[in-house]
Image 1 (cartoon, helix red, strand yellow):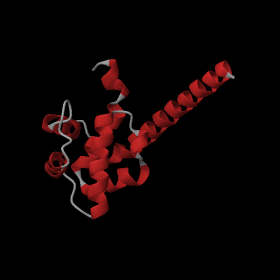
Image 2 (cartoon, rainbow, N blue to C red):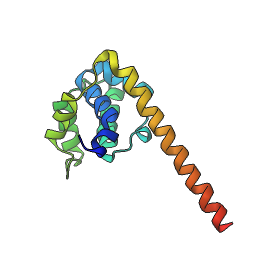
Image 3 (cartoon, helix red, strand yellow):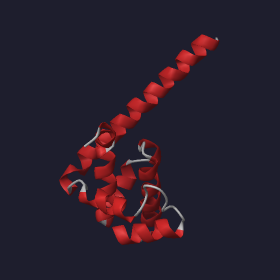
Length: 126
């Protein structure tokens, strides 16, 4: 696993879990926002899962894949094999809470860092 993969491991586990069952998708959607995810592909997949949950539809990899195809989102790294790889890395239902907390904590740290950068830039232009 590369450093980049390790950085997104919690996101991958959560997105995979959200695609594995509708119940887990609802749990994830209730607690995570798209802005909490840093990988653009994960944000796109999450948005599709969110739309499906909002419509009361079932959530599964084939359904998510179909919706991504309809929306024209299957480009570059975002493809069917990626979706199935995410499901293979899915968190167990008992682990979802841990991964939700980790993703939220990483998102909070990233926002804090971005705020610090803006403050520093404002101080320089002052």
